[in-house]
Image (cartoon, helix red, strand yellow):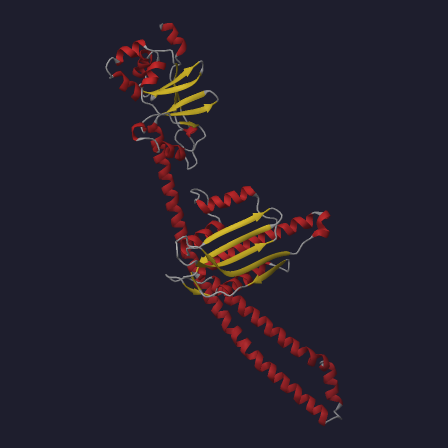
Length: 452
C-alpha cells in the first residue's frame, strides 16, 4: 500500500511568483502557489502526513486517471477528521469517498486572471467558503493551489498602490486646475489689453472713413470749380496715382474694419474659452459658445475643412461655460484631427486624387423631448448638440476603448480628453455624451443637456 501511495502522490512544490513586485494589472501567475496532486484512490491518512510535514499547504488537488477531479482543503479534511469515526474513515476509505462527504465549493480560475478580479470572485462566495484556497489552472490538465491569504495580501498591496495613484492623480489635477485658472486670468488680462487698442481702432475707423469721404468731396469740388489747375497739382496727382488712390482708399478702410472685427471676435472667443466658472451654473447662450470655439479652431485650418452650422432655437441653458467650452474644443479637435489625417492619406494615394471629397463638420442644435418613465408625467426637455464629420470613422477596437473610458475610469492610464469631456457633461451638467461611428462614413458626437 505504501508503495502505491508513493507512486500516486506528488510531493508539494511551492512555485514563487515575481517576489511581490506587483502593479495594478498584476495577475494570479505572479503569486506563490502550491502543486500537490493526489490520486482519488489514496486514503486521507497519507495526505494527512503531508499536511503535518508541510504546515503551509492549503489543500490537495485530486486526480482521477491523471485528470482534475476536485480539491479538498486542509480545513475541510480537519473538519472530517473530528467527526465521529472520522479517523477510521480517513485510514480505510479512499479520498473519492471522503470527497463526497465533505462540504465543498471550488473556485477555479485561470492564472491570467487579474488579482483584483480574483478577489472580487472570492468575495462573492458564501461566508463559510471564504477561507477556501483557489484552484488555479496554469495549463491544460495542470492545476495549482493558491492560499487565500496570499491573495488577500496581494490585493491589499494593490489597493494601496491604487490609492497612491489616485492621490497622485488628484494632486496633479489640483495643480493643473490651479495652473489653468492662473493661465485663464493671465489670458483674460492680455485679451483685455488687446481689446482696448482694438476698440480705439474700431471706433476711429468710422470717423476716418467719413473724413476721407469729405476730403474726396472737397477735392472733387476744387476740380469742378477750378478746371484750369496748375501743372504742379497735376504732377502731384500723377505721382501719387490719385485715381487709383481714390478707388482703393475705401477698399483699404473696409479691409481694416474687417481685420479689426476679426481680431475683436478672436480675442473675445479666447476670453470665453478661458472663462473661470462660478460655483453654480449660469444661463449661457450655447450658440455663442459654439461660435467662439469655431473661431479658435479655424486658426488651425486653411480652407481644408468646411464647417456648417444648423442652429435651432435654443433658450439659455444653465451650465458651466468654461467647462462646456472645453468639451466643445475637445470634440471639435477630435473631428479636425481625423479629417486632416484623412486628407493627408488621400493625397498620398495617387489613385484617389480624383475622388478627393470636401472635408466637412456639421454642427446642429435643437430642443428635444424624452419620456421620463413616470406615468402621467410630462416629457423632459433636453438640448441636443450634434457634431458630425464625414471623416474615415473610428475602428471598432478604438470605439470599445473609448466606451470603456466612458463607463469605468482607468486606474493607471492617463485620462483622455474625451473621457474628461464625458465626466464634465454627465457629472457636472447631468447630461449625456454619446458617439456613433462607422468606417468610411464619419463620426457623430451627441451632447445632451437638460433644460430645467
